[in-house]
Amino acid sequence: MIENKYSPLTESKIHKLRTPPKDTMTKVAADLLTPDEITAMVKACTRPMSRALIMMLYEGGFRQQNCTEEIIAYQLG
Image (cartoon, rainbow, N blue to C red; front, side, top):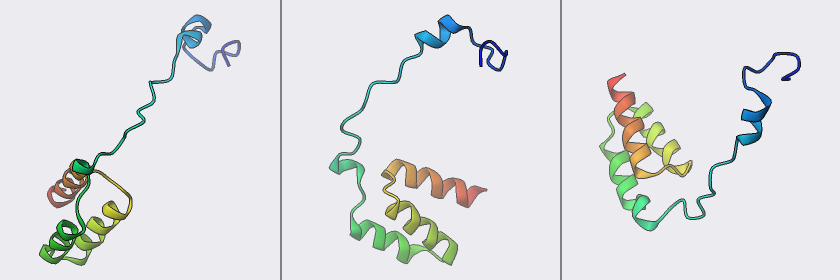
C-alpha cells in the first residue's frame, strides 16, 4: 500500500502504531441499569419507538450513560 501511494503514512509511522491497552474490566455493577429501572423507563414511554429504543439499548448491553445520551439525542433529533 505504501509503495503504491495508497496511504499517506510513511512506513516508519506505520511501524510506530500500537494497539491501545486492553481494558479487562469494561463493566462494573454501578454501570448497569437494573431490570426495575428499565421497566420504569419503558412504562414511562408514550411512543412505541421510544420503548423499542430503550429495549434495544438495554438488550445490547449499553452502559447507563450511553442509553441516556442516545435517548436524549433521539428525542431532540
